[in-house]
Image 1 (cartoon, helix red, strand yellow):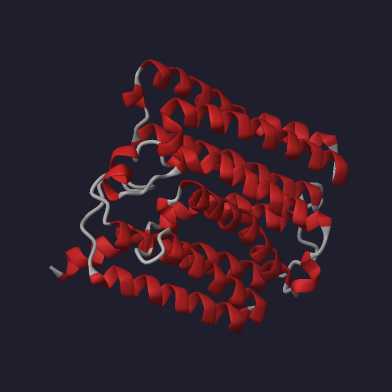
Image 2 (image 1 turned 90 degrees about the vertical axis):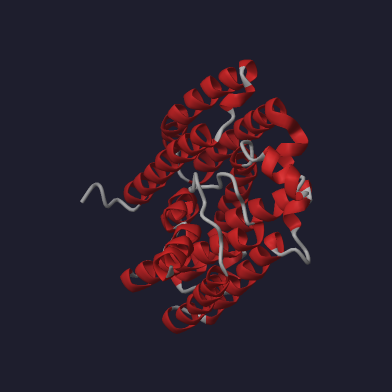
Length: 298
């Protein structure tokens, strides 16, 4: 019995799901001027092995999904241990952030945790409001996380964030999250409607979600290319487009299949899109970091 409860907790923390959110961290790394091995290691661990799983667990506990959720096709029943585990991971993340890096990083983790809880907790539950929930995820998993990562990697203060070379990447990170997040909800329409959560994907409908994401993705891709051209080199923008071409091909192919058969908007295809997108973006930003830092030329 105890083993089953612990297994349920571990599964709902969804540690592998952090892989899908890593591109934001690697973008922050690529634009960081003050690198340090210890800070790099601890900031990565704190965000991806403490903060994100804590958010996943808290969300799962209050959602009590019976159908598939992100990174978990057949979620087991939740238990109170999951709630306490998520709180413990949050506390550990903040304590480690302050002890290993600086106070600002700890405060930003605390703010992220509060917003994450407001997204799921039944007293507020931003998730049930299509626009508010969508903006919350885009801003905090995107731009706010990039700024938080930038602070942690470089041991910087608040004053170092008032820089267009940092704010523009933060803005782009938010927009790309705003564009991709509706796709993660597309297979959950029945579950969300049953719970009373009117997500943006549910509001747009299946075809509307694909069209909306396609338009926003086109816009943000142009934004990334313009950013690389202005602050680095157009070549980076060209490689960015090339790196994401497998995602575009899969997305358009899936869109065609869903248009003709709505049942294709399922968990499996969603996870394949997420995985492919994460692989391409992680690969690009790691390459961008190594290339722009001239590490590949050593």
